[in-house]
Amino acid sequence: MQLDAPLRQRVQDRLQTFALQTTPCAGHRAAVALTLLEEGWGADLAGLAKPTAWSSAAAVLLTRRALTLRNHPGQWSLPGGRIEPGESAAEAALRELHEEVGLRLDGSAVLGLLDDFVTRSGFVITPVVVWAGPARATLVADPAEVASIHRVRVQEFMREDAPLLEPIADSPHPVLRMPMGDGWVAAPTAALLYQFREVCIAGRTTRVAHFEQPLFARK
Image: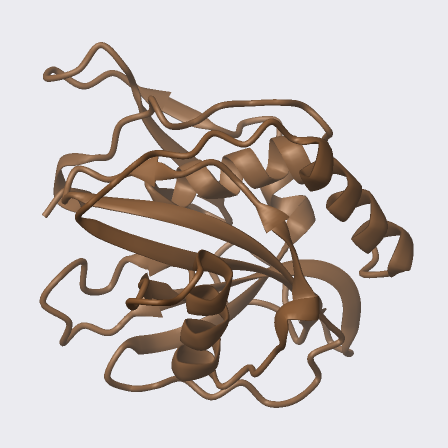
């Protein structure tokens, strides 16, 4: 799947016709940037082949959280954070994208939103789908927040074994994980990736807010 103008238009059209579900919240709100860009040299992950030349395949930008962070150290995540007073979700996602990985984009890069996801730790997360285009500039991780940056090919999230659903004792709903290489990504990030796959790439209306997070991701 190439990162090209038809893909951008297709994703934007699907988000514009998607019946968005939002969650009212007077407390903690956050936004994440679900960023489409070129695979480049690819993700250095077990089970994923790294291209030997620059690849223009469509990819999603993921990070590993710094091990020094108090909440969710070392976990897979999308660039993002709290929505500040006076900010929209899109503005917050773009600000965090620049702060965490050095990628500066303006409002024209925003293609649309996916459903809010309420975490067990008390945040309402709004996923903002962003088009970064070639993004050939070197991405620079903020060491206070990001341990590593990865461009993971969109096709990796279209695997037939995704999503992985696992029963959990304290909920009627299963934990959702997304396989990636020889490993996997946990919800809430996995839930957002799965809805992105279904709505933006496959063109299927799919809800994910009911899926559970594993115990380690709830802190």
